[in-house]
Length: 459
Image (cartoon, rainbow, N blue to C red):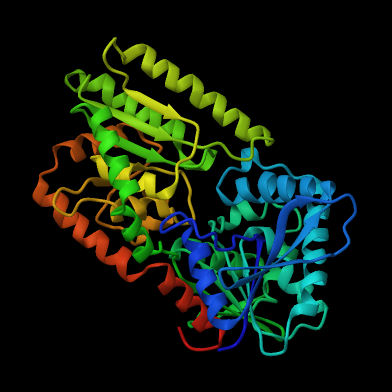
């Protein structure tokens, strides 16, 4: 097979931490890189006083990584600025939070160019290049400018926004035009692909045919839908390991006979956490007979704490959780356990297994692998119920979940009530259907699907 060059904002080499404790993306890419003797290139996460282009090569568990350090200004403008204060909110339908600073856009262009300049000498004629996510949307163009003629693919892990939102981005036409220097562009769901097509048809001179080939001048890019999955084998093994079993036992002891609802999300405004808390509050207000009988465990490790909007969402959740517990708790029962720290994935598997309901209700999400992990961790003889937002990419695959509109507190409260009343027979039927998809379309299926398109084979 051709050698694979993976390029992403951050590099996640194998760690040997045991099954289930490395992200599914890292597992899949690491396997592909080992098979092809490839290289994983990107930012180290470290800063340097002056950018030199020095590459730090390392080899870990058969995977070669190549990382560079960035200047503090690069990190502020490219990563904290354009990626996380401009593109992330815009692509998650939060135009009100997007910051359009010219310096941010300049830093984004500069870092994409620096990455291209640094990685280009490592690329051999037969290599396949796979670029990941919204941080690096200009990279294909910058590589072409340096004479790279290889097949280059791009996968967007987050949503592609509706055209009416994207057109609010200064330079949106240039950003789109640069993407046509990729040979393959992959999306998590039909929704995001259709938004891309809407933009192509309404805002560009490009054409698109029935096979998903976008053409503009002498350039062509194939667009595909290729939803990412979990590493089913590894996660299933972790979910049945001793760490997960002990975690499950501890949670059941802690529940003390009460029904547990669980949510696990990075602390981010796209995850719908305030709306989730309000829906749960609506349930408690309308069903006093449930008081003392259940609790919501919300695990929300903080992220991007230097970004103002993330500070605001944390303050909002602190206030809401305090209000809900203040109104409904008593000396023997706390209805909402809100935790701002992360847990290893094998420990989370045990928490998922101990819960009757998985509450996964983002306002906008490219995929959401927590939903898939929740299902994979369940006891086949007594599975829990997945409540899933219609605005998560996973909702297109996991159709036997209880699909809800996360903006509606009444709909959330009704879904929780339905899940609590659901018979074991229905829970098992839904779980079997969900598991079939999660098992068959796992992360390796995703990686092979995209690699096939990148190699030029029909998908």
